[in-house]
Image (cartoon, rainbow, N blue to C red; front, side, top):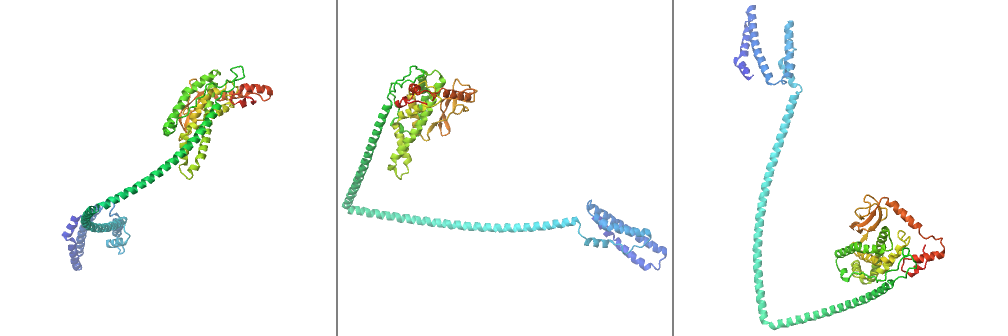
Length: 538
């Protein structure tokens, strides 16, 4: 397009056209009609050539603008002008001055609203200007930060130099102070050596005086310590006397309670309860050294004793009971109930014993924070003061009124005195642990818990309910530390209810004559106390 435009300018066609127009104007009146027509046609041909070149340039410019650019300009300016010109020429009319020229349409389009492309261009220009301004601002900020960084570097370098100078000055001062201190020490050493040389006797006298004063102070401290030791020894002797008196009283009570019970009056061995064994009951009390062991050692020893009771003492008690009872279930129920009652009675005895110790130690520990520790230490050191025989009597008394094993009366529970006494001692010592140990609660007909119990060899391993318990589980808080043993059978709940109702139905009726009641109860008495043997039992 630029080459066509250059070619049009270089031809100077428009200048020659203007010259021909001027020449035709001068010669118009003198020329003939044919000459004027020839001049007009020449001008038209020349104008047509120029228009052809201009239309070629227009086409090239429109092609360079793309598919959509220039369409609005052609529609608004070129087409209306061509339409008006050709219409006037075809109708033989002159071109009206009202028809807009190209210059008029160009001016009108200039004053119109800008097109979307122009608006986009303006927006892009504004965005470009804003980004340029932002870029300039960022460059200015960067320059300022560089200046600030340089200033901070200079300041840090200056402060570092000042700190180094201060450190050097402090080192110099330290060296001077050390030199002064060394000189002072030398002077003091010289003075002390001179004083020692000048006054050796005065130093010896001072040493003797100091030695005498120290000796007097040590003698006073020794006398005070001896007086304290004597007081403590006197207190210990008094406590030993009190404890020996209590021990003698307890031994006398235990010897009285161990006396053999009167012989049974019933003739049948299966229906009467035999007297207690003639052999003396051996009281098993832990040694005083065991109380001084740690809590873990005492716990391990008690667990071993409880395990031995299950594996050996329980079997010995079963052998004693099987001499009078043929049914194994009844024997196992009696031993389990004896164990449970022994733990209950031992816990009650431990509470009472601890209350008595607390009352006796209260005057000695008024306002002290270690009162509970002192009580616990005293209890641990004096576990041998536990009256196990009275607990055995309480257990036998509780077993005599238990409906599961006391009706019908078939054996005297005094046969289990050794076993009950061992369980009571173990349970009493377990209450002194921290935390204390206890047995789990068990009821007939409950759901079998595999975490607490193991099934006996003759159990129904598919049964979900417990018929009766053989040995209780040992618990520490809520954790099982030793499993028990239970017997499971189908229909255990109904069997337990039926057996309980059968036992109660076979008990003595209160409507019987008084003489018969007295005779029967005298032969069925299980307690070693002679008072209960003569009273009727309901």
